[in-house]
Amino acid sequence: MTSRIKFPNGLSLDLSGPPLVMAIINCTTDSFYAPSRAQAEQAVERALEAAAAGASIIDFGAESTRPGSEYVDAEEELRRLIPVVSSFCRQSSVPVSVDTRKASVARAALDAGAIIINDISALQDDSEMAPLCAKAGVPVVLMHKKGIPATMQNQPYYNDVVTEVNQFLLDAAKHAEAAGIEHDKIILDPGIGFGKRLEDNLDLLAHLADIGNGDYPILIGLSRKSFLGAITGRTPEERLAGTLAAHAAVYYRGAKIFRVHDVKETVDLITVLEAIEKRKG
Image 1 (tube, rainbow, N blue to C red):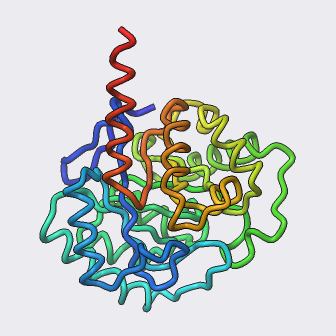
Image 2: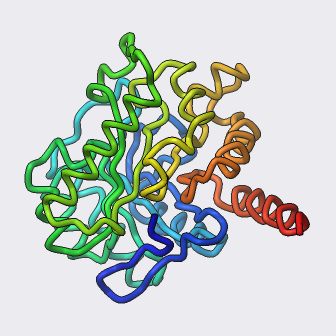
């Protein structure tokens, strides 16, 4: 597994130490977590605050892909996203990721200053995405999902969720490399909550070390998700404690990037866990 994410502009992020924090900045009006919804100026302000709080990556998204969400066309996604990315990149050097599955949106975002593409379809929804990312030389996040966001929670089923998700991601990584994307620019995401039952999510978290066979860094996106509500009975606004508990669990299972709504609290969690680990001698 690579110990460093390298960007085409010469910058890099170290993966050999504590997990990195990726801040979720939604440029949408329908995210499942209401406080994260934002218009352009507010989204830029939140991104700058997240960077100041310790986020190593800012992840902008302009299409909600929560269970039951509707498709957003490229024109609308561009309208929401590009002014925000451009404005933030003029004000901060923190690396920008864009959460999109459309090559036209990714291309415009890269032109606006983004340097990571976070694709929930693992480059499968748009045939132009893999060649675009390969040519640009940018890191990519490949995520597993079962079905499409509008219907993915309609009775998903697996015989062995860990094995099946792992194989899907390894195949997606192989496809990305065949398209010209360098091995050390591939990040895998098991897709917590994307076409999974409660027990599937828990199995993936419990066996996270098996995902990617140790060959790729793992990004985990579980912040305030519904499986935490299923366990605790809490609303999205009340799921911070459950989120931090789950992040502590995957800290010990090798996750390298935490994709989160709550940057300050997650940075504190990692800082405390690291302080304890250093006393092991």
